[in-house]
Image (cartoon, rainbow, N blue to C red; front, side):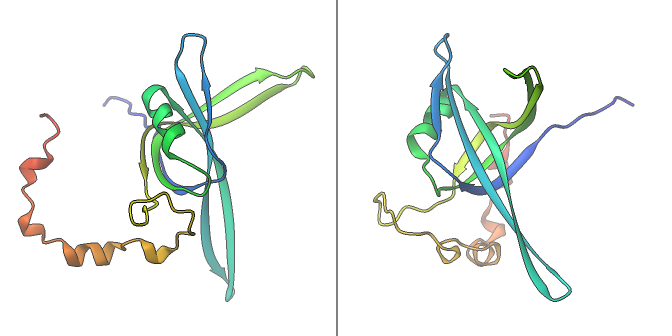
Length: 150
């Protein structure tokens, strides 16, 4: 049996700052930003919260799109792979940085009335899975439309 490996990351979270755009000497666009993800749990009747910060990097056309459309606070879905870089710092110590190199990004923050609104987005602005299922009749879906070989 062949050995299989998988390096895949999927996150939904909010940008902590506007993307930083750079270009390589060869002219390739690179966008860097941080996505924060939150989680909640209850321990001994006490509600606890934690936040994690993820370094995201997009390249080429996706980087340009991220640079144009994303801003601090935007809720996004990102998909990609983990990559750890290492280098030697000015002090001679070896440094490491783990980043998520994305190949897909979907903006989840809805636009208000077709304008770039600065209003705060709440969970009420999103459709839940149950609400979406109420609106979708699975009998009406032609699974042939999902064939990715086209």
